[in-house]
Length: 154
Image (cartoon, rainbow, N blue to C red):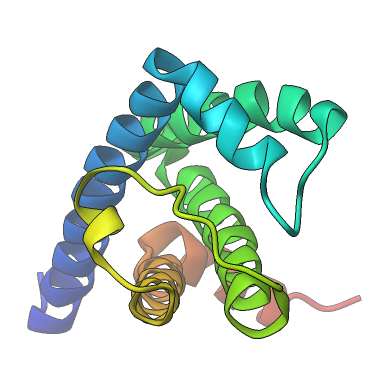
């Protein structure tokens, strides 16, 4: 195996491990402390409302756990990485809206993230989004399918 293949595999595996821990922790915490997550969404200046809070308080943690599970197996890893990218894009968009458009900034994150300012949280989200995209690009299955799509004729 060439060094660049080994390097790409290391990127994918490291990113997957990080995202498994991150999304499993976040999803389980949101489910176990469901009332707090529901209240945070209901009181959000961007997503506020009972209907959105009811939907999101179940959907978001279940999606986070599903993505973490997809990342565990090599067969579903690329799909999981796409899921990570979509979720990180949504979380980054929400954080961006809070930082630049919200009349006030709620405190709704748990764990170590609660120690960050909203601006720092935005930077972290952008970094994690870029890591997800790098892992997708570095994924061997992504390379093979992209190569085949380019070189197949009509």
